[in-house]
Amino acid sequence: MDSMSMEPSLYTVKALFILDNDGNRLLSKYYDPELYPSMKEQNNFEKNVFNKTHKADNEIAFLEGMTVVYKSSIDLFFYVVGSPQENELMLMSVLNCLFDSLSQILRKNVERRYLLDNMEGVFLVVDEIIDGGVILESDPQQVLQKVNYKSDESPLSEQSVAQVIQSAKEQIKWSILK
Image 1 (cartoon, rainbow, N blue to C red):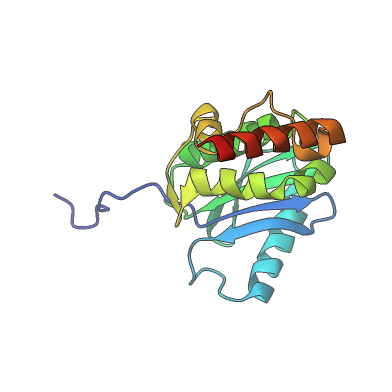
Image 2 (tube, rainbow, N blue to C red):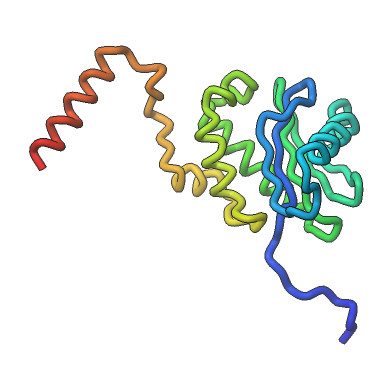
């Protein structure tokens, strides 16, 4: 047996971030504290990745010794970063799961404004897909089920005042009856 063979490990992600079409950070999670320990280093890495990828027509890049898979949609860029030894197909499945889950939550409007309006859902999705850098889920339907997202439910901002009052009355009635 070769002494250089790698030990089995869980699939891991070093970082995940979403940038707008100007390269500004909307969301980022770095799972390896040694990779880019300071905010300045993280921002420099993100700018470098954005500058190399925002006009490219590819889905994968190797930058600064890292494997980067990415996807764009209207005015957003989604990035998943792994080590150079990481399986690119697993990183791409994480990226696709993130994009498809957000597409469902944002009702197919995957753009900056809707993403910022639904940031709590975005963080829930990211946390269901990756925990501490370990890939937990790559099926968007499972992620949506875990974050308890119902596509037929309209958020509070899209409900009329009468609907909100009626819903509150029903909740109060049921809490009193218990």
